[in-house]
Image 1 (tube, rainbow, N blue to C red):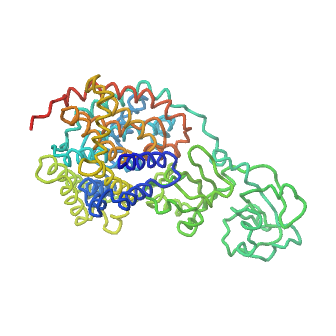
Image 2 (tube, rainbow, N blue to C red):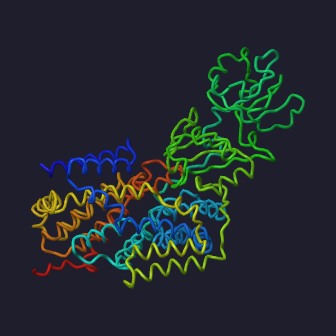
Image 3 (tube, rainbow, N blue to C red):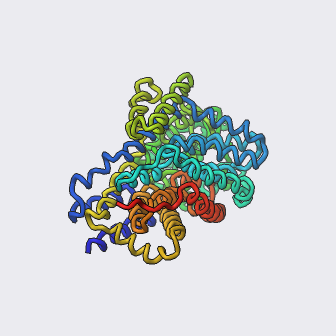
Length: 600
C-alpha cells in the first residue's frame, strides 16, 4: 500500500509540474506535507532537506555567482565573445557556447545566461548577424557547461549526495570533466555546423510597435469643444477605467509641434491631442460623439512615442525578479521605475489588451516607454534584463581578481578534499561578503529561493523510498532489473538516461535528479554493480533539456526574448538529444566502467 502512495505522489507531482497549474515549489511543498501527514517520514526527516549539504551548496553557488557578476568577471568573459567570434558564424556560435559553458561550470546556468543575454544583441548588431542564431546556442551551452563540474548544476550535486547517503563515495569536483567535456564538445560542434541552420531567421518587424502589434491599438484622439473631460486631470478623467485607454503623450493646441508624457495631475484642455493605447473599439463606433474623437486612423510608429526625453526598450523579467507572480499594476511598475509598459510578450504570444493584469513570469518581455534615465534605472535593476539597451549595474572591477581568487579557493578546497563542498561554498560566501565583492543587503536576493525550496521539499520523497521506510526504490529497481536486466547494464543505463531526459522536459532538473538518483542507486545495487555509471547517466540526462522551451529557466528566458516559437526548440534540440544519448552511452562506460560490488 505504501508503494502506491509514493508512486501516486510521484505521478501527481509529474502531472502538476507538466501542466504548470501550480508553481513547482508549491507542488514540492505539497509533496512534503503529504509525506509528513501520512507518517511516511518523521518531522526530522521531512525537514532534513533544508539542512542537506547539497541544498546548502546550491545556495552558496547562487551567492558566489552574484559576486562574479558584481565584480565584472562575467562581463569580461562576455567581451571575449566578440573578439573570438570574428564574424564567422561557426566561430561565433562556438565562442558563445564555450564562454557560457565555462561560466556555467562555476556559476548557476540561468545567471550565466542572464549576464550574457544583453551582450548577444550587441554582438548581433556589430556583426550584422541574427540574434536568434545566438540565443538558443547561449541557453544550450549553459546547460552543457554545467555538466563539467560538481557545482555546475544542481543535479550533479544531488546525484553525488544520493551516493553518499547510500554509503558510497560521492563524486569529486572534477569527476564530471571527462564525460562533461565529451558532451559539451558534441553540443558545440552540432550547433556550430548543423544546429544553427535549423534555427529559423524570421524577418524582424520594422519597429518595436509593429513587433508587438501595437499599431492595432495606438491612435490619436482629440478633446473636442464641450467635452466633459475639459478641466479634469487625467486621474479625475479615469480613462483607463471608463474607456480602457492609457494616455501615452499629449500635444497642446497652442504647441502642435511639441508633445509630452502626461502625469496623473495633468489637466486636460480643449483641443488637446492624445496618443492613446488600448481597446479603441468603442471610439471607432462613435467617431463623432463622446468626450474623445479619433482624429487619425493612421497608426503610430516608434517616433510618435519618442522624443528628446523619452525612449522605448524591450526588457525581460529576470529570474530573481521581485515582480514575479505580480501583475504590472500590482508591482506598481510606473511608480517604482517611472516607465510605462506598452505591451507584453509571453512564449511567442503578444498580450496588449489588459495585459497589466496578467501575473508576470520569468522570461516575459515587456515593451516599456520612459526617459533615458528611467530606462537606465530599469537596466540596472535586478528585476529586468534590457535586451536592446545594454546598461549594467556599475561593476566594481577592481575587485574582480579578488572575486576570482575567492571562487578558486572554494573550488580548490573542495576539489582536494580539504573541505566538504558545502563548507567550501559557505567559506566563499563569507569571504565575498567581508571583502564586499557581493553586498550583504543584496546577497539574499541573489538566491533563487524557489529552487532551494523545491529541492529541500522533494528530498524527503527519496527518504520515504529507501529500505528503512517504504522500500519503493528497491521495489522499482527490482522491476526495472527484471525487465531490462537480462539485456545488460548498458540497456539499464540507457533506460535511466532516456526516462530522466523525458521527465526533465516538463519538470525541474533538480526535482528529476531528486526522484531518480535513489532509484538509480537501488537499480545498480540490485544488479550487483557500483552505481557510478548509472548516476552519471542520470546527471547528464537531467541537463539534456533541449526539446521544450519550458524544461529549464535558461530556455524560458531566451524563448521570450528571442521571439521563438515552441516548435523551434524540438526542431533544433531533437538531434542534439540523440547525439548526446549516443555519446553518453559510449563515453560513460569507458570513464566509469561497470564494476561489480565487493562481496560483503
